[in-house]
Amino acid sequence: MKLIVGLGNPGKKYEGTRHNIGFIVLDEWAHQHHETFNKTGFKGEYFETFVNGEKVIFLKPTTFMNNSGEAVGAMANYYSIPVEDILVVYDDLDMDPGRIRLRQKGSAGGHNGVKSLIAHLGTDKIRRIKLGIGHPGKDGTVVNHVLSRFPKEDHTPMLAATRAAVEAIDYWLAGHSFEETMTNYNN
Image (cartoon, rainbow, N blue to C red):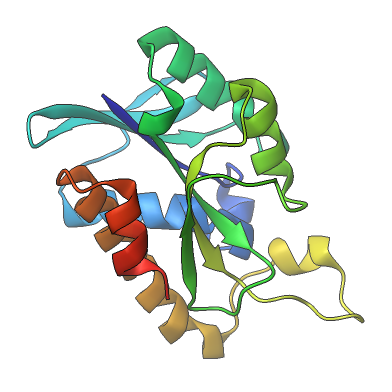
């Protein structure tokens, strides 16, 4: 069994914001595969499906970003999902819009949602897909930046990054190792 998690904040106020790119990627995966987030529990919205005969759960925590680990930890514990079968999708300030990067482990890098995941899963060896959202620069505030919507000039690169992230998820779920997936999709 695999668990795919998109990080973001719940509610209409946050829809389409940079910090919600994890939700956006999971919504796009669901759209392409004719699935819907039809269940609630484990402090999140989710759906269960089968890919190549394996059960896969797609989860969007509803705890708000800073407490994402509560939902992921609860679901992983309930279903006994090992950490190597969890993949998390989230935003990265240190990459330009349109770039994606897959990693097998690493620090939170200042991302409070990832910090919460590491605390609740007890390891930094969490597989991840990071999508660049750009940095506000020295004059901008990070909070305002991540909670704002993408400007028009970022729409095309972010759409490409979202589609690449969906393809990377599909590639991994097709049975390729995460190392192979990283080789194919890191840009």
